[in-house]
Image 1 (cartoon, one colour):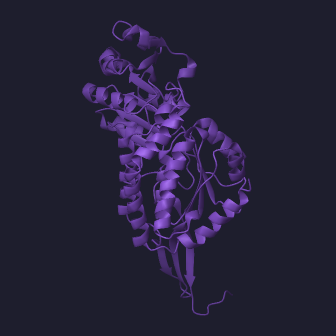
Image 2: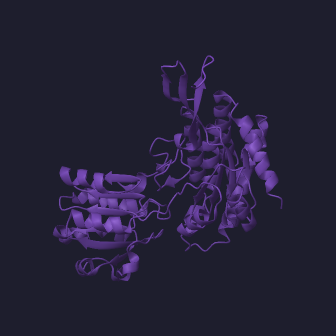
Image 3: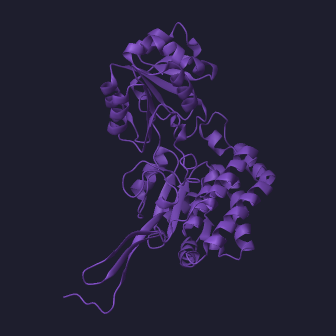
Length: 415
């Protein structure tokens, strides 16, 4: 297949999308939200075809699965995006120099945004809505695991674009075949930025092979530290939510660190997890205290490999640490710089944790499950960036823009 023609069409479309009015843009997104709800049954039928190809025990199964509620959530996120102010045209800087040159720094689209993702059909709708709102063309390359689901959602998007007489190439869904990935990685001159969404292996592959600038949306190896002053009831609720709310997402909890002076509270702290059938990999000290209370069929001795693992399932590591400094050292060694939390009533310890931990999102006395574009008031997200250049954390509308300098003069020349 000649992928170059797809990329050429995307680049051409990027010159027309920026001229769409904000009113039209919002109307398209609102109509898309309603259309997705209207076509729920068909989308779910296509999703079942994908689910039939994947074992339920696969960590990606939950990410792949769509339900009526999840489609409703996707639609609501799109409506949220439509309701937000567009960052395009925002004046970031405005000054007149001594030579009377008028210089402004304005927000503009990135251009053509490529996204490579795995078994996450919601990404098809989320990325389109955010890119469309910010005047970007979206070139999407979904995985074969979600091929039918992605096609069904893309078909709804295209029908809404056609209804509004908008260039259909503002959203291009490439075939699920591997050759499309290779072509996209090499689409230099056509695609302005590439964003991988998926496993660490996918992210590494894209970073190492792309000829296009890459924004990494990294894997989440997430810790919660229960401090010496931590409130037990808060801790129980926070840890249970962070681990079990949705185990397959990147902000789910992977490791609990507990201050050694609160070790006797560990059985109570983790007791709700037993009801949730969470399998624990415990270090020696925590294993000894848990073996008399936690179900033995769910309790294992931890090995080194369990620390620094993104489980994406009902599994979690536990480690006893001497104090806050030891917790900070452990996090620094094993964190993927995604989301990290402390449960504490000590203001000094909270401040130290929030200041010292190097992560895209840091929490005090709250679940890491909130690391999400919609939860951060961004409408939706294109991913959670764990890097430090251009964007970090949930990538919403502002993160899909760059800027340019606009210089107006009256005949000035440089000496």
